[in-house]
Image (cartoon, rainbow, N blue to C red; front, side, top):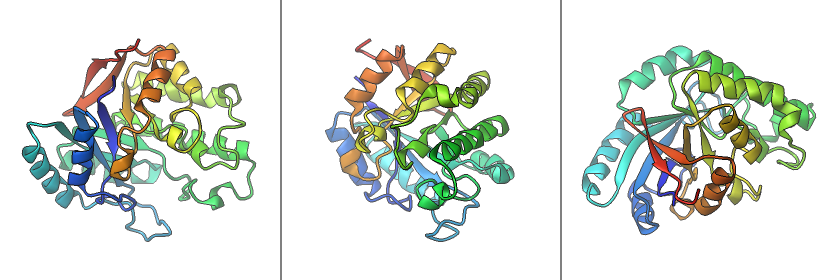
Length: 272
């Protein structure tokens, strides 16, 4: 049974809807033993919501986290994380930022390509769905080759969540040239990927990434896999974790990972 949710957003993230303490209480209620908060830090992106959108106030976030960690120390293990939006133009910012705070865990995610988030339909305008997906995967590969200041790549097929047909026309083979290189690059650099259960919430029938990607990562020798709900409000904490566990087992994983002080700790998946 998976009891660690390592991708969580509170009101410290622009799109978070629940306060940190409410998230913690719900996590305890759901039987979690570990929660890692991973607020958004998408620096250098001019979102429609404003140029500073999706940049957490890290100082206040860290102070609040420390208070909550102490308050709930006898009930649950809390870890301090961040979700970095990776774009090639912010290498210097990230290099300095990750050294400034004592993060336990860093997710590197591609939320934008060319300054546009696939969440917005503009990303798909003037492109076929396949062209848009390929462009996104190529951008991830470029970031994986540039950055080393993260622990796992977050929701590696995030673009599928918002594509015109989502995952209906997706096959690993169609993008295997890029995805194989991406998985090999991450493995060679000692980086993992996450199993993001939000895919089930979005009606996709699988976690993010697609089970074909999870399976291929494992076939290539990848072992570092974290589990996260990507919850932005308390009710979605640990969403569909039983389905994520089944998917990981089918893909050949025997362990999942929790990061503490940027070091991976492996926990057995009980149903393998």
